[in-house]
Picture (tube, chains in turn orange, blue):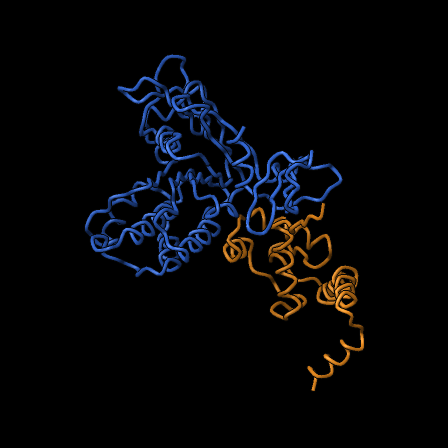
Length: 119
Length: 280
């Protein structure tokens, strides 16, 4: 049937927070913006942000600290990076390789392009 | 809680009732969307909740807010409610004068919230209300409504007349300032303007031109996500046996199907649900 599923809103917001951890906006141990600030930033209701927090707490990316708020867990950046790499290898790369084959190219073409970019 | 029970209402001089034995409950602490086609009674319902219109007597039905009958229009109940009408007249005075005259009616009125909303909308701190454009008046009216911090905020078509950037500002101020103990009811036919804000959706419809208003849906967005799957399928899938409703858009066929318990949730497309309900 060839259909695409889009990510649920709270998962997208969790992804954006992970982006912020990867980019260095948030370091391990930093307090993330409050639920209301994030709700305003993403223009969503508070419950959507809370669901994103739940997801990230389950994955040990965020950690609730009583009286302080939501903190970036120790090692969060490493875990986000590992998860993103895994995701890249499992989903994006196979698709990429399929396209290479379709275009009659192989990894040496990629290698050459990579070296030109680096030069 | 807003408890609408067996509500009857007919405009004077008309034959057909708008509401005939209509019931609906709105819980505290949520952002509700009230969705209906033009002319199906959204504004009438908001006025009835506010006590601006009084329900027809007969079966003893009506609207109770936190246990108070709004038809009595007592201080105890009016202080809980704020209605932002779709079009609002503002007197030709400065905003600060307007605020001084009206803030005593709202015990939780917050000048900080007012200032933050004005800043977000890019308005000066104390505009002269007599010289504002329609869109700017709307922004002031929204800012004032949020600043009242009333327990129940009834916003009738709040995004009408706002430009694209201001619609974004509207979503930000609502997300930031509708507090945990407050309930906001946003009536709209511009679903895309507000859908990311909503916790709960109420859809109204009418069977035929003169029929009374019917409740087509009263459901949390989380519940809709749990019950239905929203997918983009390839064109030609409209005959798939599981498709409840579909709509062809530029990027393909947007489909609505029942969700199977072991499938992941998909992002809710309220527009599709809305059209599905109105087609039935």
